[in-house]
Length: 484
Ligand code: PLP
View 1: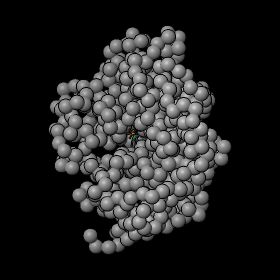
View 2: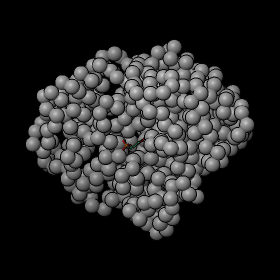
View 3: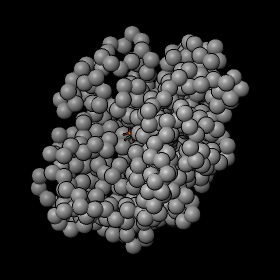
């Protein structure tokens, strides 16, 4: 069970990231920010399609789109053309003074993509900004609706929601928080345990197998209920979580029923649900919005939704905050304006890029491809690596798959963080097998647990899926097959 931080909790000790004794180490790229000297980064000449071309050496197969960003692959002419066309009309327009066509069209397109469940859109530049804005909008909404006591947020341990002070305050990432604790807000940001079935499912009482989704979810929901009770239900503004956890755990989908149960708790207590789809959203899992579920998973509509990486596919720094009917309705009816805004908010070139990316995804039926190739990717990863003694878990959805490494498959004991196992796999993959995967370390289990993430572009072919799996599996076998 996660420890709910109360107002009386002692502030976390302030440490430098690499010296943190806490349960999470500061891996080079577990959040998409590789440390250049540590990785000896190649200098890039160009990128096209599914490949990176360094100045020196052979091309590298892109199996992660950076940090799940390049959803359309690199160098698409249609997107570049749309950006150029916008640049020749006007390069910038202040959102306070003008409406612009690309922003209008993109907003309309996004709202339609949610069947009108989300009703308002703010276009920004980064994921952190959208989470920051979501927290502030939640707070302001409760002022507009005369509920000023709602100033608490409940998020989860081993979570990452961004690098700015508000988004870091809500994040349960010990190492990222450690140097900045004096500026974070423990009085308002509380955490329940992560939702990580591989690590947290209990064995059945009968001794055969593990508890069902239903009983696992019931335990998680009881913990959330306890958090509301402890804080006072009318003090909670919102619950914040990723529907499919990205870098913090390594592509971990919520078990069936979890999101709906969290939604029900929020509704029962009048709190908002903020979904962070910065990494898992915009088609990555095979549906445009991860909350739309798909397959046997029912849709669970958030009140506020953050999207980023695959939003503009890396063609521009783009992100968006989507606002659901409950909040947007009050804004509309009462003529409320969000007390918030960035100079580059609703940037027309960002909007033109995002629109071109999203239209290409739609026009080319790429979500269908994500689902089909995603099945293949998952199956091949399991076939090729499932039996490896150091592969503990393979999980994911669509073009969003994580492979977790363990010291002992039976006990699920993770490797010591200092060994940098995931980073070794990453380095070996890129240097020796010329495939780029994303790696993370330290947020799983009891804070330890190495994983790599495989997140190719939505245009991937079956042949390239096979090649990715072959190269990645070879890198894994190489790393674990040689003495350290
Ligand atoms: N939320 C999630 C789930 C993320 O993965 C990230 C970035 O990795 C962020 C928020 C922050 O986004 P950005 O780095 O664009 O500020």
